[in-house]
View (cartoon, rainbow, N blue to C red):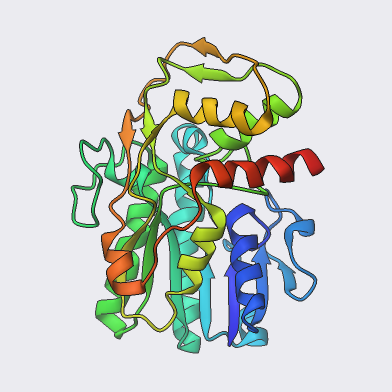
Length: 301
C-alpha cells in the first residue's frame, strides 16, 4: 500500500511510519519540521518537508496515496489559547486541505483526534457517545476537524476515520505537547532535577503507550467510517504517575508542588470498548513497562 503520514517526523507520527514500514507499505512523510525531527524518520520512508497549510497537489500527485494517516497538528493546548487563529489554521483548515487532496486520489483518511481535550471532565470513562465539551481552542479545533470528516463521508461516500487518543507517551515524546507530562517527569529525573506537579496531583489521565497507539492507527485501514477511542480505560493520577516514574528511574527526588493551572481537567479517561469490538484493538503495554521503555530511550539520548 502507498501511504502518506502527515506529521510523520513527530512523536506519534514517526511510530506510525515505523509500523507501516514493518508491514511492507510504501510510506511518504509530509512534515514541516517545525516540531518534528528528521532523525525520527526511518530511512526507508520518503520525507517531504512541506507545511499542510500550503498547496498539497504536487506531493499527492507524486505519491498517489491509497491511505493518509493525518497526524500533523498544532498540539500545544496553551498555545491554542494564546493564538487560536494559528491553531485553527493548522488543525481545522489544514485538515480540510488534506481531505480535499485525499478526495482527488480516492484515498482513505485516518485522522488523529483527541479524547481528553474533546470530552472535558469525565465522571466515568468517556465513550464515543459521551457529551463533547472541549475547554480549549485546541479541543474545539479537533472537534471541528472531525465534523468536516463526517460531512465529507456523508457528501462523498468516503470512509474516513477519526481516532480519539488518550494521553500518549513513549520514546520520542515532545515534552511541550498536549500530553507531555511523562517526558517532562522523566527528563527532569534524568537530569537530576526536581519535577513540578501542579495542584494536588490528584488529576487523572488515561496514559496509553505510543506503540499501542501506532498499532491501533494502522489497524483502521479498510474499516468503515467512524470515531474510535484509543486508550486503556484506566485512569492514573499525576502523583501516582510520578511515583512510577521515580521507580523506573531508580530515583528518590521528590516533586515540588505549584499552584493548580486554570482550566485544567481533573479527570479524563476513555472507554475503549468500541475499538476493541470493531477494530480488534486492545492496549497491551502496561504503564510501568511503557515508562521503563521511555526511560531507557531518554537515558540513551
